[in-house]
Length: 580
Ligand SMILES: Nc1ncnc2c1ncn2[C@@H]1O[C@H](COP(=O)(O)OP(=O)(O)OP(=O)(O)O)[C@@H](O)[C@H]1O
Image (cartoon, rainbow, N blue to C red; front, side):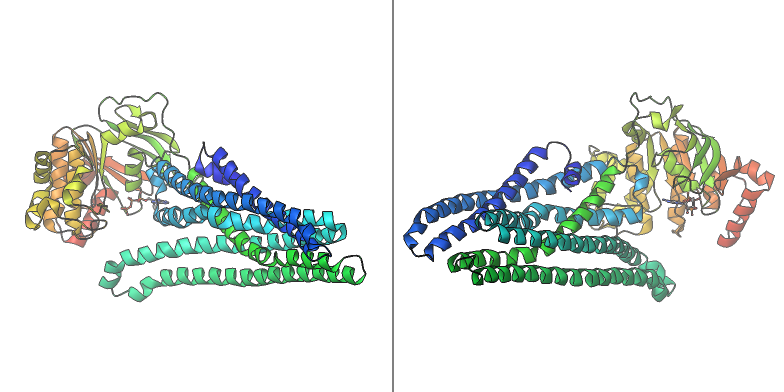
């Protein structure tokens, strides 16, 4: 547990953590000494000569004063450790996550990361303040007091020690049961959180097709599964906690019965019996609370395991001696790739070239591998075999920053920050002047969007860009890519319906960018964009089924031509081999 915590926090925290732990443990042990000192004080107070209690009372007062000071210091130190843990875990997660390949951030991972960074970290932060001190009081204090008790009466000490061993076993079983149930509930809660977000996002589609009930089925299933795991946790935890509380009371009753038995047998004086009874009864509450804190400890352990699982996710290796690409030729050379190790091949021997000053359209049926090819070019993932080259250099040998400078991607599902339009475009170049913004806005069609909005460039776009239309978001995204001024541009054409103006905009931008000497790849869904391309790569089932110029592929009258005819029929278009 401590090792897991230190691993999650990173180097430099071992000493302060060990000091805080030692202080908390020492304070609990000292509390045991305070309780044990009550025995000689009470023995003498209740005996024939109460004045004999004075020296013991002085010792008790001195130890209690030291205990009070250390307890306050411990509280302060533990609060500081708690905030250090919170800061360290957030920084470590933040620093690590930005180095993870973009392919790591699937929808499910985003939900999980959110819960880990909030719930997982807060459980761990609670450890030094709310979990460990009461647990140490419930475990260390009785152990020390029992050891001291053995000095007064070894038989009673032995009986108490046996009780503590049995209680420890029940305690371990209890917290294990809660820990297992909690891990299952956590996984179900992650799934439910993802489904809620998905349901909210899919509302426009579900309502458009009147399928809100059917669309809820997945969410209902996930919520039901979460309830089921919460119920299971309850059914496991409550009997375990009740059994533990019963075991504590049974053990204390047995010890008290032994005290009475020994008094009646004349082996123990009444004064000692009263003193021992006070001592034993003093432990009922902390011992009873131990199971709850043990359960919290197990939950924190689960949270830590999830934090460490994120920290164990490996970033893509950066080259030790980065190679500088020469130019912006893009080459796919017999590329093979699957999303899961040993899983189905999503790209299987894909080879093509996209040269500077040309527009290459990746075309093909849904699931053919077009987006995957674009992601491999931007190195969201590494290929399993073959090579993706930029300017003659394998993308794995180019530094991450250099590759990002060279490749700009306009995604289909544009994400905008909850800031103004200007801020969103400036993400590509924070130092861009207003003039730079106007220039890229004129080229991307964003100028018309800005002109129509009352606050112009200063219009807030809402979370994720929610207050803009799909077409407006795409224009912001294109403006952002233009501002980045990268020599290689990948445009993922929206497959959803956009208005005619927006449809034409992307094609025009792609042609213009290629005309300026850039390497442009478009994941093309529209016949007009395909017709405007210099080179078409038709991907089907992860393989290049055909490739060539639009004229060549139409003349071939193969898979590509049939696919385009089908799409034209669907849209009521007519295609010619002419460039747009
Ligand atoms: N993150 C992912 N994890 C696992 N499998 C994935 C992932 N992304 C895509 N796939 C799978 O890889 C295959 C190719 O998907 P890809 O998105 O590259 O196809 P596409 O040609 O771009 O399709 P579309 O035109 O519908 O966007 C599909 O079978 C898809 O289910």
